[in-house]
Image (cartoon, rainbow, N blue to C red):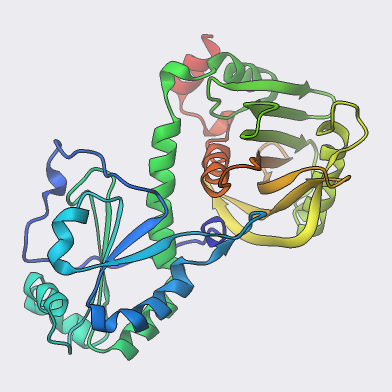
Length: 364
């Protein structure tokens, strides 16, 4: 689930182009299509080796009960570019030592200094946003030979993946956020009572607010076959040494056993021990451990994917656990878990909120 293996991205270099992209124009219509499709403009005779390279970067399996991949790669011909230039994710791949139409096209849009940088192996990525549509991502990859392209792409695979995923997350959050349907009364309640807040959509309901146990559980579409859960748990007077993988697993199981239970209290949520993945993540400037995996009821009656951010806040000496889960037995889980993931990242402590946001919330 490498979308959900966030990395501290290194900067990808944008090199100059000879042609004009209309990204500065404000009248662009929103990009269309699925979030998980990357359309690749590439020569058909070179596609097999391109696909073998880029599939391992973009088409990695994510952690859901049924196999799903992060992105799907679809090759298109250069002469079809007008059909796809409004799509959300585009990539152009070319070898400068080839004499096909894609290679000639890329060479025609690069200036001489950029071509020399690519030929020397110093650069290979051009990245642009909002070229033909709003919130669109365009990446051009070029190298003198396939061997050079392969070396550069694998060396920068996390950056390439992160670039597309970051843009996708921003689009998803843009679709989720609507101030007209924001539950500001709940956001204000948590800010006033606990010193933190998180964006809450109108169709989320408060399932648990337990100040003694320092646990808040929010549910969207409860008791349906497309349910999403968010919970926030914190520990006061914590120690930064508590921030480790074993503690996260044990503490999550402790709180879900107490609060995330079946109606008759006979079954409870726990982590399925298979396929747990931990990674480091920069959460709004704070070092955190990101955990992803599968949850299940202990009687195996139901389950689904979850994502979890745990971090230590030195200002308040609190250890925070932010967690999102999906139960959707009849539908694809990938887009739903992405929604709860980006929602969790809206979490802010009082100190992190701008003054006008605090005044806006506390006025409710």
